[in-house]
Length: 494
Image (cartoon, rainbow, N blue to C red; front, side):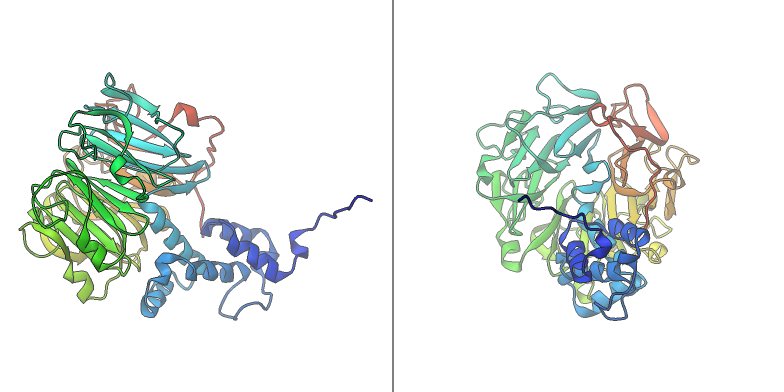
């Protein structure tokens, strides 16, 4: 006799089983908030947890936080500080942790997993493991072959085999892609061997596997000017390419044609994130310390000096003050850091107000950005003379040089300066999940998977074939992605 199964309402399940479902699934903080609002089962008290938790969902968020790798690395005092910063709301703490982890790679949106990365005159987009590029680029940078030097709309890049791309980084003349398998592909100008292919110094016109990293699975790449840095899943860092300023971190100025392990960082501990400027590198360790090496111009290394560092050197300002850094961004002439409490620090060249302190003075070591400290930041983004800070509500602060409208203030002149952080009113109607800025253009992705660009479009770097520039955020459509795109207003809260 066939077994008969009776449908069971979730309200009929034991509370401990519901809790297990909540903490074992791939739920975001926003998902938990929605569940809490839609059913008393999730929002009520079930006697499963201490009274300090507001609901079953709040307790589930707490359980997800303590199992989060970023949170677990914090000391007890820093954990308490983060909780206090989030008003004791564990869903907000979880949203902070998840947003920080997604800020340097893939973000989860209602339209799928995405990442946006801007280079000098080009933009790369990952959408559900496929990669698209637009804009201008010589030497095969765009990844479409020797005959393609410009794509006026986002065009999908073909890989040698079926590849699931999880992260991309692009500099002036080359790009690097990390696969779900940990393999790395590169394309573009390889005259400096920054693409990691020793057998040729000719351009790589289509993505090619970096053979030297076979068996060394990676999770992140960072492309600098004629050099590349690779972060492995084990927390080790490799580098290759030009080494004029010691930016490869090996203690000398010898170029490297293939990726070479940076021994000193391996000895220090495990690296969790890397960022590459024009000729320098920042590396965040799992204990929250930051190491820098390469060119010391404009005080970008954060040591109070401008001489080059051929070996990774710890930034003492963070260590001495007990600041646990979780993410960094390396601009052309300045740098930005985000700590475990959602506070922001800037240092380097202050020209045009790029550091956000209300002046144009240089800062030789990291300085707390007091103007935004009342907000919990989740992403920092620096490029030439401008900076963006994304906060956990989905709003974006911008400051620095307007650079042809790429700072996002339509009422300002193309070359104006904004020396103090200001909210981008033009994006207020959207919950921004990730933002990236190039030399003269900026692109943002919302939690609904919508893409907006502003700034210069002379080289089609915004993915529009008819506009020369956009002072206001203009939606970008990718032909292969438009079917079924959810155009519900970008509003969510947790």
